[in-house]
Image (cartoon, rainbow, N blue to C red; front, side, top):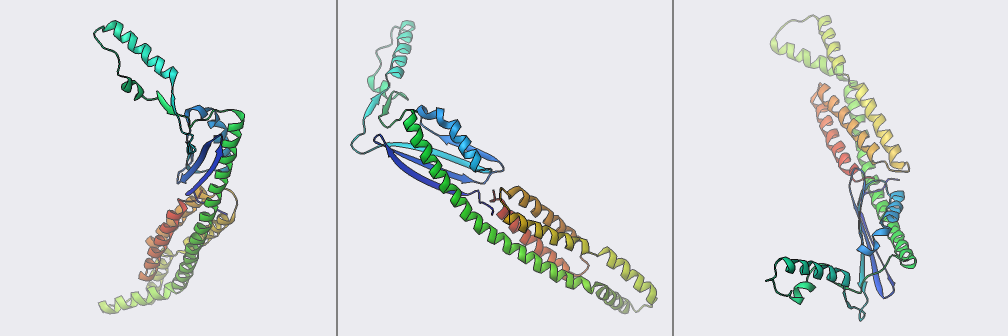
Length: 289
């Protein structure tokens, strides 16, 4: 079964007076590209989380965001003393170079990035890491389930388009089965319009040559083969997006050749219809993992 690359999942859990929220979003991408947004104190756990994600998802751009919120009534302002001391030390060095500068405004110091924070923080200790990992895996499971559900819908849509291709191929086979007779009738009608005399044997030879040039049996057979291969990929496990994209390109190639070799208006129109359907398949395949 194929999976979609578009999905969303969100889970929450409480620990040590904090509300943890994981949000995972995935969209289309040629390869796997993961972006983690974590609090600075938890950067050390990013690599293990990436490994967990990589084992479960093969394609798509995945944004993973962890938010920490202090529970109601426990919110406190925290002064980051190391950062404040660094700023004061730098100001003291500046005053040595430029003595006329006055004392810094306390509010300016507090507005400096990183000086003020909140108690909504968590250290990467073993207990906290276990909670975050467990919540991440649960959210990832939800994300994959969403991708599976959308994948099932994509499978039905693509299968319907493949059925339409089969119908058109059968119609074209019926049209070309009597192609020689159609060409002969057209040539005779043209000769009659010109009021000319033509050797019947010569006329039949010309019809045979035209029929050979307009023979699309190979293209029709290859279209059937590609459709069967696409169906096999839709039902096979593992990522199938790139394979299906390649098959869609080959289907389009055969449709183009079919259109260029069409000798009658009906087959030309059928070739156009084929290209429209194949383009619809290619658009849907871009969403497949």
